[in-house]
Image (cartoon, rainbow, N blue to C red; front, side):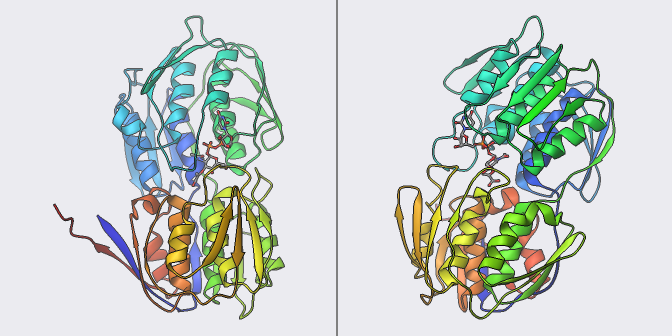
Length: 423
Ligand code: EPU
């Protein structure tokens, strides 16, 4: 077990390069099952969720070859729907993409229930509804999901009851090789949806409209291999933007698509933080005084839920009272208890947190209760003068590529320490 130790209070200064997007990478890795030729994916982040995704594929016979930093070759020619290890699929959320990919390739799928961060109930009813519309018969048992489509999948019109990233991407994966046309309405519009469509289209798929709420997919018989570069991670970028603002530093966050950061940039500017956009970078300069704001998380292009805990830290440092409303997940405020250990004054009422800014925070030992909550703890520890410790960092490593080295490179006093376990 490891923890992160930070001596905070140092303004960050310098350049941080952003890695490929976690939530695009994990979908595209599973989508490689549809391509019976070699695929090379570039800009793959070095994170635990990618490792687990690759292990899941290897467990069903896919050959994975690391060609260099951030570059992998995936060859699924000899794979078979033998049933991936339930222990592995239970380690992450995105293992649900295996269901769409196996149904599309073999017409049968057997996948253990997905795991992932505890953000409240995480139903998969929309995924199941979508597969059933394409002609699959889905059964969910205590710890496994079985799917069969003896006559293969056939295109259909699907209107999602909620805007869901996972079900939109899973349906895209399932529909790419199905017979006829699939139309997805009320589709999610996140940049990773567009990236998955771009990847599959590069392999020969025919997907139009990704990035709007209506996606049309003309099924094709076969996909071919390609080399594809994954889009930069807007949430990793946003996290470092907040770290710069919270420490009163100046950081150039590079290898980003500034357009994807619009909602984050807008809120920072509203708070009085300076953000300068370049072609593929943003420069964030913190200010001595930052203003309180109200935020509500929404599906893209709204303010991202995956930036909610990090912004909460910044709102603790701002002057005045802020209201932070969570519009996607039922239980995304579990980290508030950890921030209170640092002296934060936050009250949570249902899906809204009221944050009293300007309260002096103190260093503390805290836990990463999930991935983005962990990132928030890192930001708080960087901003508060003195030594803080963050435990359970395995959550952070699921989604941040070498966060310790990246922060060190901009002047943070941060290190990873091995914790001796008591038996
Ligand atoms: N929902 C349903 N039924 C479904 C699917 C979703 O009711 O079948 C609901 C959820 O309960 C939630 C809302 O729809 O209230 C949105 O869920 P969505 O399906 O969009 O979430 P997800 O696909 O499970 C992905 C990311 C999350 C991110 C959300 C929202 C991956 C692997 N995970 O989750 O990322 O918070 O979209 O943007 O792509 C993270 O990276 O830290 C993370 C949690």
